[in-house]
Amino acid sequence: MKRTLLLLVIAFAAIVQAQAQGSPYDLNKDEQVNVGDVTTLVNAILGKEGKGADLNGDGAVNVGDVTKLVNVILGKEPMDDAVVLSATENADQWTDGTLLFSIADATARMVSVVGAVDKKTLDKADIPEAVRIDNVRYAVTRIGDFAFKENSKLTEVNIPNSITTIQQGAFYFSPLKSVTIPASVNSIGRGAFAGCEGLESINVESGNKVYDSREDCNAIIKTEGNTLIAGCSKTAIPASVTTIGVGAFYGFPDLESIDLRAVKFIGEQAFAASGLTSITIPSTMQIIGKNAFINCANLKSISVDKDNKVFDSREDCNAIIETKSNTLVAGCSTTTIPFDVTSIGEYNQEIKGKTNVEPSFRYQIVTCLVTENCIGNE
Image (cartoon, rainbow, N blue to C red):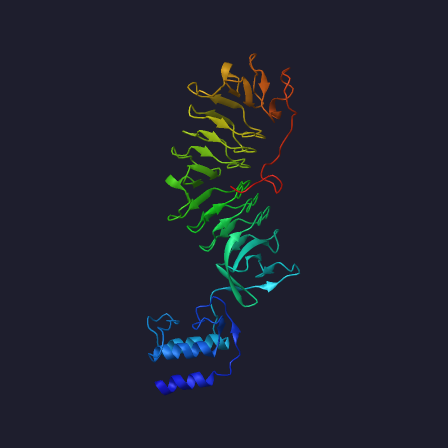
């Protein structure tokens, strides 16, 4: 056996070195896979140094692992599961033929998915865990800002456990049907799934330390703070949720109703451009952000629980009024402005022209908070 192993070492002494940063086959840690690694493995098997590595997965370190290593060096077997990327006309981007990638951190060897080669035809995005650029291995850790924005055919995405960050607007107005957030994700930017009107299933894998989908709610909840940051037309808000995040339900025309349960805070544009036909503000509500119900064309009924200490809907006015300031903060096409309302909150274009109240602001229709210019990370 010793003679066989030594012959293998000699046979591959002249093999051209292959760059292999981060490879499990780089046994001597010189950032190359070559004859030196064969020598290291043989010495481990002979008991001269180290423990070697079970490269062929048979549960032992033996001559089979040497054969595996040699085949990798010769190119007969793939070095690992990393997808090999090729250069594009953009010097900062590489592709696997379907998706586009850019280097996010060269030192840490991390890349971002930044888009699709053809955003008009991609219907399924299979994001790999690792890629190789110029034979250097990189982990795929991010889905970039607006990476799949308005990809008109994209209905399915597979997000691997290597992803830690989904940046702002990543799937903005793409027709996703379902999404699963892996346990590895620890940051999701605002509007990541805004306008995905076909989205009906949202799930966060168990074990995620930052987000959850408690009670099969079909939403992404930031565990600390009980903030629902992304929902869909099938979301059922758990009673433990206290905050609806900025743009959480933006652009869901099939969302006709929602039970706000014990929610205390609603972020800006939380339900903008949704299909809500009616809304009841619970007694727990304390803050409602600007444009929370803007462009809800079907909204006809608005009421506030009589026990709410901050807001009311006096005289069945079909509006939300801040009680202390007599400011109408949200209305709809059927709103009747009570006589004692003294000001109208910003951006209430739905009731423009229905009153002689002189607002101390200009009317302005804001079509989307979630744009490249105004959106921020969570």
